[in-house]
Length: 143
Image (cartoon, rainbow, N blue to C red; front, side, top):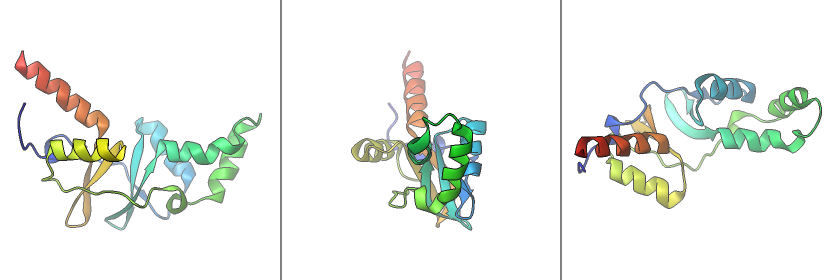
């Protein structure tokens, strides 16, 4: 397996992101439209948090058993802001961070995504799915 490959090789560069001023209804729409599980949150260009689909579900789950589930979700989503629900204590890596280092961070901290920043600007995101795809490619090359 290749050594010292930077995450810039495997990171998602076409980033779907939210602003602190966005609401949770917009976040839910982005999760569903793009079939993703993590959305970086920015203030202008700087990463300030990470919202996961699990975070969103945790907020909306409280009244999910109600027969008017859609109505309840919109009420609950309006009660919270993206800034209140997102993870704020996140680890941000640089494009030069190696894939091995990123995998170690993800496994040690039980995260599933790492925002990638260059000079404080969000330039990508690396997820466990990106790592698995990379690993599968490495096995194909060995055959």
